[in-house]
Length: 234
Image (cartoon, rainbow, N blue to C red; front, side):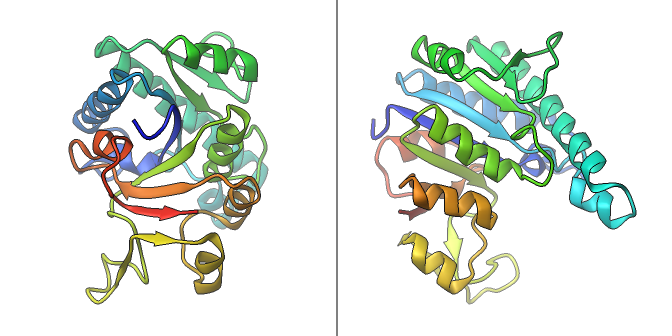
């Protein structure tokens, strides 16, 4: 395998499947099976999942809600998604721990770096919920932060598209895909990979990002096996 320890970043919207909101059990089960394949190879897997399928703090703020309150609601949404993914993984007999940046001791462990790394070393999947625990930071920032803290080899950002394009391929048929691109080029071209805070943090810590299509069966396993899938930012 190319990597010993990975951090998989999934958006909350990815869990919607064909639905307009909420969680699609079929899509959740598919993701659990994909992750199980990787765990069975001995690769250590950590996951950060968004909450956009349930609530976005930015959307709440645009409708007159206090931004801090809205972001706290968004953090709780990521915990709901984390619990759902944990359940799906455990249905596949994959040992899983959910750690959160905000204390909800009845449903999840608090985030403790050393404990998270110990879980990973024992072959458990660790899901990080609650974002960074602070308002105004996205789950992209949380993904990069946690990846650096647990010394992950790479961030794998699972999306609906198969990489980074010159423009949105769902809206522009002439969009051209990059197989590999530097951090500097992404910033120069203004491409939307992650929010600027997360992206800069990844660049400063020399942590590569691979953007790939998570919805194609087997892609995650093929990626860590060395196949050229998605777009590499390094």
